[in-house]
Length: 242
Ligand SMILES: Nc1ncnc2c1ncn2[C@@H]1O[C@H](COP(=O)(O)OP(=O)(O)OP(=O)(O)O)[C@@H](O)[C@H]1O
Picture 1 (cartoon, helix red, strand yellow):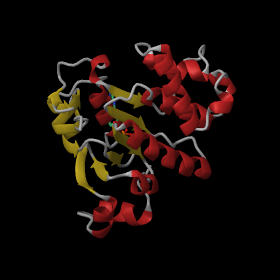
Picture 2 (tube, protein in one colour):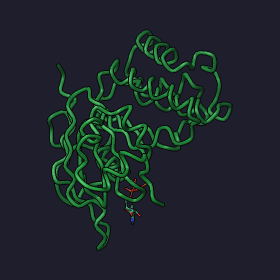
Picture 3 (tube, rainbow, N blue to C red):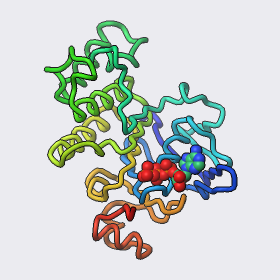
Picture 4 (cartoon, helix red, strand yellow):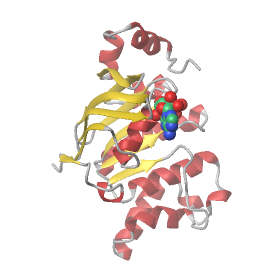
């Protein structure tokens, strides 16, 4: 099997005198879904941005597909990123947005991949629309399809469910799971919502003050939380005290 693993070793990030990340360690095997969960300001987005190559760590290593990534640019990393605010191209249709990352594929391949993503994410009926003609949930699904289209080794999601109602959320959670398994990507998802984390994750990483304070399967976290913070959020579902 192709190596699509992801590992962070002792990754630190400082801005001025402020320590944003204080030595983050995490490991995800190929094809697994990891969830970064933690309260607002704990450093989740910074971790995602460092993995995507949008920021550099001050210390530590980011190992993508078994290779140290310090010298690999954001573009060369084979990492897909779905932002909270979708960032779709406003002048391109749904189909064109999804096909954007497939410029190197033949027309036939492109058509097949786009059709399969339109189907999996229930976007067939709106394939010819432009982003401003879509609801928030539809835009989010297009953004996910666009990021997954080139079958990235690693796919990163920053709060993918934040603008969705609970029914849309439940659907999208299942669609994301199916897509990630189909694409054979390894996924890391940021969420505030412990319910999302417990339902989606193979492995959860609880972030507190710029560090992973506990990692494990949802069951492991529920049965043996290492501190009162983890115990409280796993039992009450509250990650955000703000
Ligand atoms: N460019 C910056 N300059 C100064 N401080 C920053 C900068 N970027 C992030 N921070 C600080 O780093 C900390 C971690 O931010 P980050 O966005 O990673 O947290 P988060 O866990 O993703 O939060 P949220 O859930 O609210 O999005 C916060 O205290 C934030 O204010």
